[in-house]
Length: 114
Image (tube, rainbow, N blue to C red; front, side, top):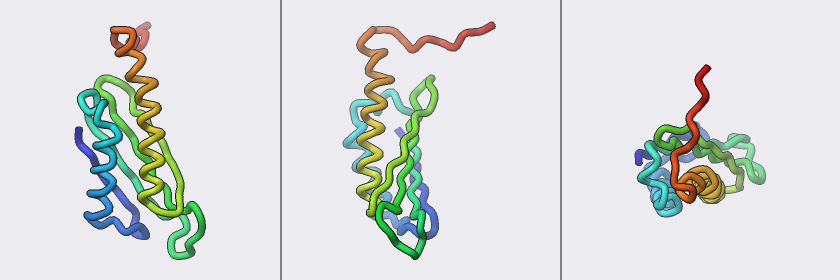
């Protein structure tokens, strides 16, 4: 599973932040790693230099093999907190989508062809 990290110029997009978020994602999404091709993380500061509560946003998009992308966005006052909340929400959605097909022992229904 490949993790791609993106940030805007107002967020400290240093390697340290990217490494922390990537490590947290690997631990939260470990059970889905074999079914995901890529994870994209986008962090931004919506207020820039002005500051404010819950102005850091983290959008995480998971790309399942052979499926449609699943994305979530969460806000918090710190980038790490927003990423943690987004990863938890994404894990719940992945469990709903990917866990259902595993429980029923079949692949997701293919799109209808007319």
